[in-house]
Image (tube, rainbow, N blue to C red; front, side):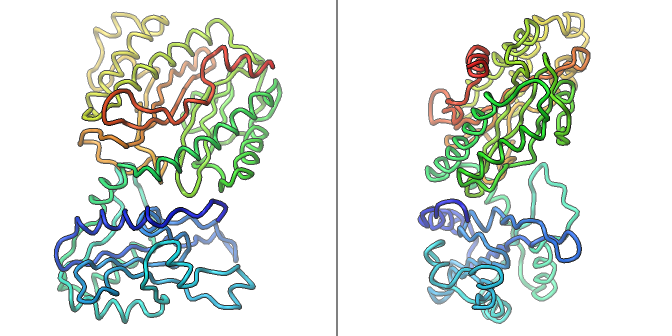
Length: 430
């Protein structure tokens, strides 16, 4: 791993928070992700399942975590099963985790090789009544691939039909949405790496540069700062490309006078950051671009103030919609008749700002969090308003990552990343 080892006490705390929520005489199992094939002997780079990472720190394929807080013997209460390492594997693939090293990373003392899993599980099932299975219930999830976790669930249900089933996901949705201080530090580090990448761009961007050249500058800066790379597929959208919300081709030339919408950010130690800035190709915003830019910035600043403990998601979006409506009226993009005649299910402002204002962020860019429950201290949210005007050939979005505080305004993890028109123009013309 490129990142510095995380203190195992974070994972010890996370397991304790999870197991205290488990029912009596229950077991929970968490699987690592598969390594996915491309074709021939090619594979995609391995990315660990965030749940097993959150609970153990284990960042290796073919790993299983088993939790059984009511097991009769102490050495059965937390167990890791790992792919057995060998000299041959060390030579061809690089050394895998030894049992000793796995303890250093996770704080779990009982470690077996994976081939012992079924035999040990069989014994433990005889002491238990309930199995927690880990299904993906994220509100944005749409999974067609059979994952390692889903194969395990199918196998387990077939083998142990007399046991009751419980769900890990609702517990994890609540736990993972509220960050420990160590997690906030890791997200801050991801934001700091993103800042380095963004500042590098401000002196690099000139008319006629290609969008993919900007992408290359970013990946260079991210990797040299111990990131694996982008936290999500980068959006580098010049001109009218910015009006395609998930434009990822990044293959066009950036023309003088246009704006570039950059939705690009680094990961660090599997934790995400999520930045959007919109900068002028020629180093200066024109009058209209500046007018729209500052309107988006005002919406972002006002929306950020609302991310406070106790706030409800639905009401927050309604209030932000009112602020955006006011700004769009000021820009002449909608008029009072549009507002008076609007469909309450698709208000007038949605013509120019059609996506949500915020989402949870953490180990996943669109992180766990239950949207019907009030916001809590130490949740991390994006704030990302945008105004998209295809008829004028540009779109502007601005996005920061903020931490909800117990009282008062949230803490901006991207406070040092340039956002004001004057600062961006000054840095681009330095």
